[in-house]
Length: 252
Ligand code: 13P
Image 1 (tube, rainbow, N blue to C red):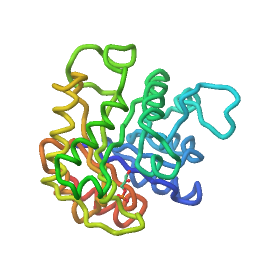
Image 2 (cartoon, rainbow, N blue to C red; image 1 turned 90 degrees about the vertical axis):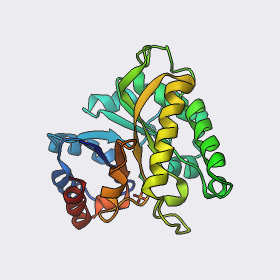
Image 3 (cartoon, rainbow, N blue to C red; image 1 turned 120 degrees about the vertical axis):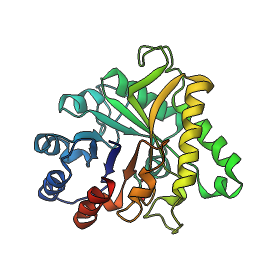
Image 4 (tube, rainbow, N blue to C red; image 1 turned 60 degrees about the horizontal axis):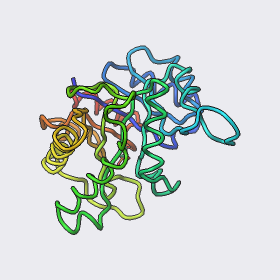
């Protein structure tokens, strides 16, 4: 079964609604990313789905007003951390360097990581090579120093604590400008490129690769079909109950 990861972003507005969404989504191979204030409630409500945090800080404790420690998150029973989402890079000035610190801190706390990468429209317009170069740089910098460290198993092979989400920025819904979604063929090619880059290129890693960007009930089956794509990371459609029901039906 492929992975269905749901990034709720800044939704819904109440814990009651968050619990209702959790009950609907409580299935095996689902990872829920609710807003941090609902993490505790969602972890308690779910039995089959795993739960992740949308963001975390790289320090464990201290004078860092407003931040959330990976250790605190782990102590709630949360299993995953989303790191480097393009909205965090855009609105909160996250860089590949802070992404790298967050990944290391998440691993040190025993959390699994989904590293988000994806090129802007300006890169894609220059062609597939420019898009790949952009993504490659994010991977190399984001995962710098992680190979052969205490964070990951040194040997090559399938690893369970790191996944990569390929989310081309121009395909994500809710942006200021609406662009068409990527095609399943293109997303599969980029997933293959990401796997090759990590496996043969420099890390000997073999993480699962998810696709994200305007995935909904109409296209989810197509995006899940290619062998190279191990799952999807869905935003907007994952907080609409009717869409959610259809997504589960079509993803089967
Ligand atoms: P949408 O599914 O709303 O395009 O969002 C994708 C995304 O950013 C998931 O992390």
